[in-house]
Length: 137
Image (tube, rainbow, N blue to C red; front, side, top):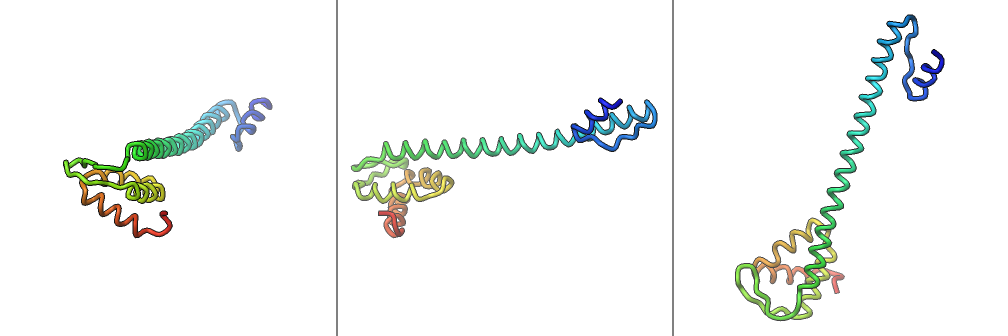
């Protein structure tokens, strides 16, 4: 019985009443069930935290991919927007937009990328904001 008691104490299961064999079995089952429930709750919390962290990493990766695509594809010249409107974009315009993009958090980067290419009005508004923003260039 000593080995069983030592094993239970080692795993944090204490306070068993060892009066008789039947009582011991009932207490052992109850204690093990409680310990399993505690471990399950801790494991469930840990898995939830890892999943949340993984989701954040995936989102950040997507934003980084959009950033790389944005930088690689954004060239000076005539640009055609999603609504088929055109606008001549200069190299300095691109530099302002790139700097603004780099200064944003991932959520706002995603918003900017989704809106800036809609039409020339949204692009012009974003460019105006970038030029007014301090410390971009």
